[in-house]
Figure 1 (cartoon, helix red, strand yellow):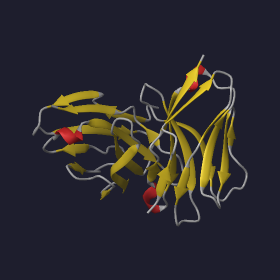
Figure 2: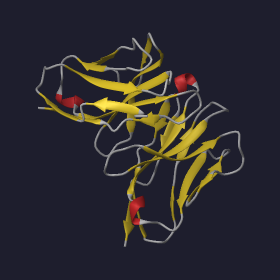
Figure 3: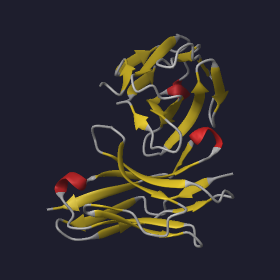
Length: 111
Length: 114
């Protein structure tokens, strides 16, 4: 049972490049989330999904897109990378009224 | 809007002693859950303890316990017999009924002095 798996663990991008952060969970959780954590700060919600085919914006969605074609996968897309998107990105999943399970994070640097 | 505030950016404690981390929150919902998460240098987010708002009894988990004051909207974490492995960032979080979204505090960095 792998839980929540994020790939890659580290990535360096140039300004203007695009990439997709992958997130997969094998717990059949309906809720999935993407957060970003800036240095010394708490986590801020980027996007979330309450089930396959359903996504919605969180607190800081600008510059990102998501899709949820299956229960298991919830990729996060950066279309035009900007230095302000340098951060650690966490994916999480849960079922109703239960704590969220987090992946190990992806450290992304935009140079 | 729901908010979570941790007023102590850093705390330190001697090994084997007790430390309390503070958290206050604001929500208009009557039914909610509160959590404390630990984030060690490895960056993992580890659930420490949870509290259901409808329960008056404070949650405990081995050396970890909370002081939940619903009327005051306060949710502090007490760590007894502190160990070196307890050193980490600690985040207080409130779960919203809408889509079960978490709202996090800013975090408290806990240092354990040997």
